[in-house]
Amino acid sequence: MMVLVAIGGFFGAILRFMIALHINKRLVGTWIVNITGSVLLAYLFHLHQQENISDGIWAIAGIGFCGAFTTFSTFGNETIMLIQENKYKQAVRYVVSSLVISIGSAAIVLHLLTSTN
Image (cartoon, rainbow, N blue to C red):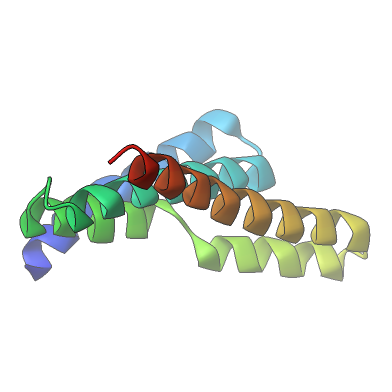
């Protein structure tokens, strides 16, 4: 199982890096990655809970890929950097919007998926 998580993590980390290079704006790239990763993880979680994907696919895609694709450590570091630069309003907007949109999007996806069954 750990090998499957590692394989998924490998691809998740690479995709996150490629998005960061393409967007070339750290805050925006991290924000987009964390929100899309939250939505994807909610969808995969639902599929796994409904037994529509195997434990192996869950390990690769949910745990490995999404775990490496999303990045709480970068989010935390960027928030601290904003605070150190005395950009308090931007730091608050970044934290609040990241949390509300990521969690809200995941909740909406799960709600929509569970209400259709």
